[in-house]
Length: 304
Image (cartoon, rainbow, N blue to C red; front, side):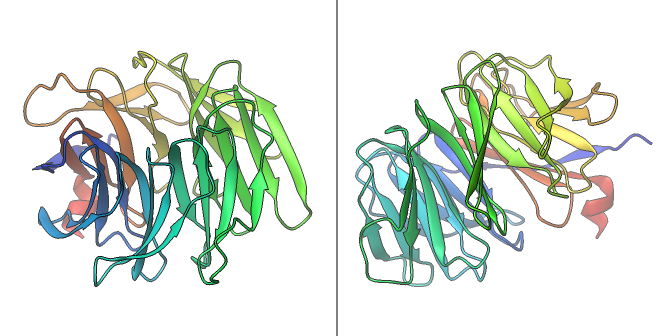
């Protein structure tokens, strides 16, 4: 059965280039990270700005909302990781331990720890509930910049420009590494936690079996142009999604590996589509395209 994707809205974020867009844990809100050093909280379903957060000294590269949406963690080119109070809009804590710009940040499931990845090749774990300023742990195995961090209930997954994905199993204290052949620009767990979706600089999105490291599929056709493109899976784990230098959201069927859609905004864009976020419960997608965020949904999830 063909799935129809509907373009719902385009939001001009008015914060320079949008470096990242992220749905909140329940999908009600989203965050946008701007090259203007600002972070914005939105209701994307209505296209309304709820709050603007200013405190970074340089471009904001990534952000993530806590599990109860009361706090935000963000990172940027100013080498800092900032914990925000959502309601007041003020920084609660500033974590300074990275010696290079910080590309990526995530909370763990309980939002008690923040995990950040930097161009200083390190991943740092911060206890956001204690008053200790130093990282609880520093993972220094990567030989190049960290491009992405993802966290499950017992694992930390990282991607690096050194061409490797690394998975740290916190329960057993083990690290597993797989070499991808080219710089890794994005890593993601599939929804069922069995596989890993990996974007590489060679414009190939690869689906890997998490435990065996076996290559299950390759998804191609889009253009990378040496950009840090993000990829993901849809809610049912049936489609692979990726940004592209042509400004479109590319979608492949996971099983057949065929392109099923190339989604664009209302008007042509010269900007690459770099960041994307999938709603936690429905097939609703947000993507960052230069200064704008574009929102699509499947017909079925629009009606819900």
